[in-house]
Amino acid sequence: MLRDYQIDICSRVREAFDKHRSVMVQMPTGTGKTVVLAELVNEELRMKSEEGGCAKVMIVAHRMELVEQIQQALLRVMDVFEIEVHSIQWLSRN
Image: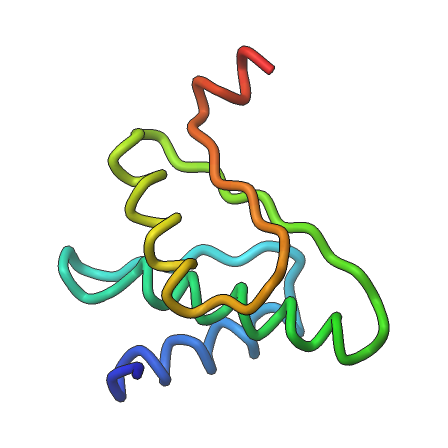
């Protein structure tokens, strides 16, 4: 369950994506950036699925600790969508 400020940031991100192709979110340490990311990805994939479309998501993080943290957060909130989480180092090798 999201906190009020996380719900607000999700709403603001959705509004920003309506106007812009890319969006950056900045939140202080410990405020749930990973939870917000997981919620936004889950919403987007669910919407694409309901529209009959198919979507694939790749999330890139710069440290393995973040890759693992993101994977765990996604497992808690996701349905059965295909999501890849990789480090920048993995991307440069592959």
